[in-house]
View 1 (cartoon, one colour):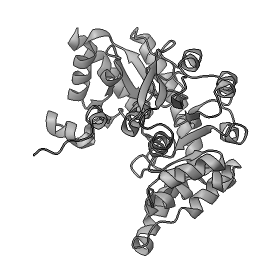
View 2: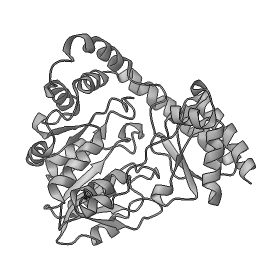
View 3: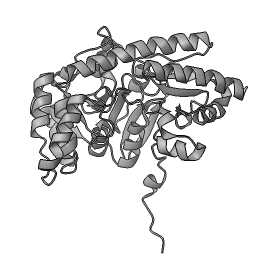
View 4: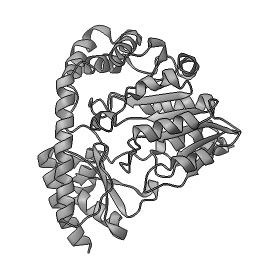
Length: 366
């Protein structure tokens, strides 16, 4: 007899991560040291030096003990001026998103997402057993009016990703807050801000204070991007104490390992690294924009550490040519953006290599 999974689980399309360097090296016979990975929006400067130092000093002493979330929770509460009981820690911010879906969606209920929004939200809703209500985009971004119109008595969760991945679109603080005010208070809104730190001051808002005003709001952030801890896996959410209490009941015990907690706590103090990472990203954004303009390539907005660019119907072939040249990009077929590829913003040297290889790949695929 064959073991049969629940039907809604069998229907899930798994998340497709960026191709690993070692896999590309094996497939194309390349030296791993010559390959650059610009597929997963990782920090090109590596991890926060303070986090790295904390990890080195942690392992010999405390690896045998179960993790304690107290220090990171207190540090986050102090840094962002929120209550400790409003914080939810996760194995990456996608873990917090999954907790919301499991707690507030489930069988017989619905979760609303935007067409091109980060796929982890759709997966979380599907895994919970709920129905995905996917709303058409507005210029590759969120159409908040259409999302509001999609609300039904069965809606349990609405996801907004800002800036959005993979399209880079951004909703203004005023438009976003107006939407949050309109949504019925019995529906949980998840505001995914994984790329918040890369925003310019004019685009930023103190959204971590909003759950105190809007008790149905959960704001999620991550240490995977600007802090450089993607491989360590730690993120957090801020919610009303009541919602945070529900989510902390759902999460597994010790869902964030002790090494990740130690690294994240140290990284919060690494202001110099964060500033340098943002500066490198701003310079790289300008560099890629100018490079795309020179090659007459259209691209979507740049509000994070990545950019989606249009290459037409030969995106798969161009992506393959880039891999042969040791440059790993992200294909956007899972998002039905078959004319586009996405590139993470790297260092000056990585960006130059990408632009040169792209010109060659496009010519080869012509």
